[in-house]
Image (cartoon, rainbow, N blue to C red; front, top):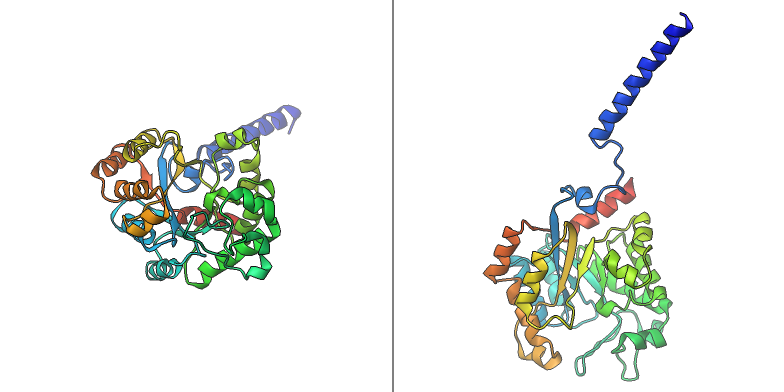
Length: 324
């Protein structure tokens, strides 16, 4: 075989190889998990709008438990996070055991903010002394936690709260942070990430835009590289704009972006206890109504083509990724 024939043979082989590469690319064989959107990794189209409606403060009081339960069974609440140190934990734990298909996470709690309704830690007090105020309860304000407690104490308490939920038979789907205490300080944030890794759980994270405002533009990317899974967007009510409950959430739903968004609410039934505990009792009741029985909200979800999911798909994705 002369040089010309060898050249043509190699040229043909190279051409066939390039065609093969193009074929494989067209079917996504070289699309890594990191280049795909979260929606795609969950099995949806990149243009789909996926929505998690998470109810915080479950376990705090009976009315909060029932707000979450009714919202899950009759409405569009898809997830809840439980405050394990609170008195009504056992009630919601019993419900979760009987309804393992419902998505419940742990609302990691280092504060006890109400004036007359207080609680302490799950871990023994002598192991987390810095978390306690002079009245013998968890501190009311986030700043007080940072001033008096250590990240090591936060780790002990966070671990105890997750373990309590697991030992109670709750199939925990994720973690988030009550009043943001595990997220507002960089050292406490490290503990938050450690807990997510230790228990193989997704965690609530602010959106990229928020992290850039907080001068942490690379944090989401860094956590993703660790194998952690979190939503693309997280929307909490802006106190300045949150005057009327229903119009606020209608506007939010109308303007959802493609990808996975978490809304967090505090759905609660109307009760004298809630009214005495919190100045936001009426808004909590209205949130429960909006996301449980309001026909306009339900219709809007359909009209906008929004796909409702819980945190379980994120949990399954994270654990599947870790096993690879």
